[in-house]
Amino acid sequence: MTTLAPAYTSGAESAKVSSWLNLYQQPLSEIVQKAGTVDLVDMWYQVLSGQSARKYVDSDCPATIDENGVVTIPLDFWVFPSELTLNYQLSAGIGEISEPVLDTISREVDLVFDYSASQDLDFIIESLSHSFETAAYDSFSQVIATPALTFDGYQVQLSHSCWCVVRLKVAAKGWRHRVTMQLQKYEQQENEDGELNWTGYKIENIDNSIQATWLDNGELQSAELDLVIPPCVEDYLATCDDGEIKSLISQDGESHYMVWYSTCTGRVLRARKVK
Amino acid sequence: MSSLVSAYGLPARSLSAFGRIEQEEWKPYTGGLTKYAMAKWFAGLIYEQDGDVKVDCGFDADGSVTTVINVYPNDIAKPYTPHLTHGSLGGAVVISETMEELIEFSMAKRGSLNYPCQSVVSVAWQGDCYDADLAVISKPALGVSADRKEVIASHEVYGTALVKYNVVRHSYAIAIPLRPDAEMNKFSSVFFVTWDGPVEFHRLSTPPGADEFEGGCGSGKSTIEPPDPDDPSLPDPHADRTTKRDWCEPSIIISDTTTGV
Image 1 (cartoon, rainbow over the protein chains, first blue to last red):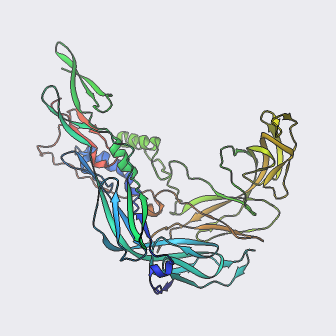
Image 2: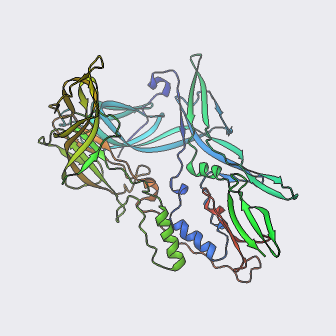
């Protein structure tokens, strides 16, 4: 790979617009959101050995519950402004946004130049290394001279237009934030016998977004990021798992039926004759 | 080889000057467990049977991503060369297929096809054909345009025709090994063809979680420590057991003795 030194002057000059801002959600691991056979086997042996599979912890799904039944969901996102000194304001539909932390993000991508001489990235490039994955082709698929590659601000440029694929390793600086959502998932309620039971809430269709505003030559500009709620969090919130309510529904002499039902759906989870 | 393929539900897409390049889609359970695989695993664990069920993660035995690219050239006599930016490319397997597609004519003579038509097999008009005044008119004959991207009616109509037509598909098996030094997009690759026109390309998709699995569905060895038999908190093995599960955190799965029920 060829490494290029930072040659740009400033984002505002190179971008040829006064100021701009991009929002980007930190992607989540795909693996931690799914169970595999390894998880099945591990959990099964936890159970067989008489230990609770509660101990099999995979805490990478960003949802934790406290003793009061409140679920906390932290999601990280980035602000890539045209200049790091750009003053911006953030608001979230749900949740609190943390103070910014200046951080570096690295990206590695295959960039296809489809008969173009420049490509725009989502952020100001701090450093870049590259290697050509293909020859350069003209519009008749004939090999032509490999162009020189440079970058300026958020733009990657070729010295001449062609078709080619370039592997890029890019580092960029931006402001990292965290939005923390808190939702009441369970509540303690007293039943008719004076016993305290947990009641769960089925939480679905959560939409959350981040709005950013900033001034560009005195004009208010805005950008919005629709946050992706990880599927494991959506499933967790939608699961109404409090079906441990005990209810006596009949009695005949020495035995009676115990019925467990979900307070969310009313569905009978289990019925058993008890002596 | 010949097969009938329905292209009914495809969104209208115009064919390029070269034709069409497609990657075969990943199966819905690629990278995940089917109910069958899960049940088979549990059966193996409970009854100590061989629970070896292959979980398809889209990887070959050597950890390469394996996929297939289908090329449908407009002109099958015109030479082209396939390339791959990363990985290995098998030889072309040439297959003749019959496509079936509904083509709508809105007072027009030309209807776009999703695949290059080498010859029309049959045409079945769906109901009547109409003129601009919505009077019923004769059903036109259909031919193929010179570039094979459209069917052409003998006169303008409002109408819908079910067209069966022959296409020629060139299938290429592809294996993409891990890019050992890559931090992201570790299996990324671009398939492209060179011919006497502009380069045509298709950016290959990788199976879910490919970057993290790095060539396997997740493997490892775990040791579950047997519980201390003298531990008073150990559940009574004969007691009822309550098991709860949670979709988010596997840790929430509970298997404790049921007490006080």
